[in-house]
Every structure is written in C-alpha cells, then in structure tokens.
Length: 277
Image (cartoon, rainbow, N blue to C red; front, side):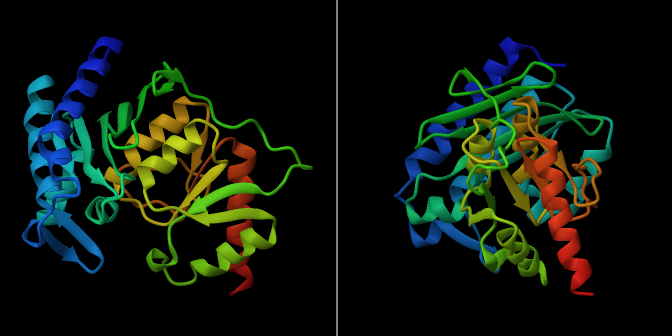
C-alpha cells in the first residue's frame, strides 16, 4: 500500500505542516488562540490549522483517501464513519498533548496513521521540540530517530518492578483506581504520563515495559499501536481481543513489550474488578 520512499514523503509533509502551522505558535499563543471543546479539553488555532493542512496534503498525496482528524470529529462525529468505509483513511492528531503545547512544554507530537479496511498500514509520530520521529510500516518494522526500534526484552522475575505508565487520575473512569492499586500491589511501577504519543515512542524503544490506556480515541492511539507492534510489542484489549480502531473495545487496553506482560496486567485488573463485585 505504501513504500519506504512514500513513508519518507509523508514524514516530509508532517514536518512541513509543523513548520508552517505549529512551531511559529509554540510559546507565542494569545488568549484568543485557545478555546475549550469541553471540560479540560482545549484546542488552539495551531491544532485546527495543522489538521486542515494535513487533510489537504495527505489526500492530495493519496487520491481517494479520507481523513479522520480529532478536530473534525469534535465538530461532526459522523466523520468517524470513515473508519469502516472502503477508502484508505488517514488518522490524524495534529497536536497530541495540546495542554503541554499551551503550557509551553515541548512534550507534544503530531500523530498520523494510514489504515485500509481497518488495518493499520503505516504510522508517523513526530515530536518536533524534543527532536524525535517514529515511523512504522506494516510488516517491515519500526524506526525511532532513524534507528530500528525494539521493545524491552522479556521481564526477569528477579528484576525491579516493571515500569508501566497510565493516564493521570483526572482522566480515569469510575472504579479504575482499584486496578491501579492492584497493579502497584503486584509490584508494577505505575506512573502517570502526560503525552500519549511520546509514551508510545518510549515503549517502542524499550524505555517502558508498557502502557495501560483507559480511552480509545483512534487519533491518540493508531500511530503508536503500529509503532509498538512493529517494534515487536504486544497490544490487547482487556478481554484479550485485538484493539479495534473503530472503538467498542473492552477497556482498559494494554500496550506492552511482550504478551506475558500484557496477560499479567489484564489478569490483575480483571481480578481487582471481580473482587470489588
């Protein structure tokens, strides 16, 4: 569906859009440049312009394709219907980590993935300020900063607690705290992350053993899911099934370095929920 040369061409598009729409506004936003889509859900003029530019350039790059972008979906949820359509779909988060971007932190990224018939084909994770780029091509591996990426090796039972990340408690659904407590009691080193795309990069290069995700917006996860899978990692919904881009997954879902870690986390969370009745 897409070649290594085309992978690089799309990376160039993403870098160019950042140069035009995102980076000039970094640490230069005015109050009028920021709006709220909902509670704790900001959007900036940079998000919107970058998504518009990516839509224009990506659909021109691949005629007949469509875009499912975070900002378009926030205005019209029917845009998500494209995920189950016949056209190739670009899944776009123009700025993953908008809150960080607004605060002047460089921990944000642009996430782009290409899916056909619900199957991920390629992905790009570009964090311009911290200078990181992750790419993946289905069946051909993943690279981070130009180097082949590989997840952490299987855990040694005698090693220190596995480093696992999850979202900040403010984003947790009711009852999820029991699962976090149970993971910590089982000697998992659970910490909170602030930028989903960057955490996927860390899992792909072995800096983390896994992530536990409590929400399933495809623009937050599509790029990272392929990146980790092509780096040799493992992904599963809480019931053990593959994670579906269109949603309806058993949550939380787990992204980890290997299936044993995934199954261990699934079991801990499931048993904690059963114990709570």
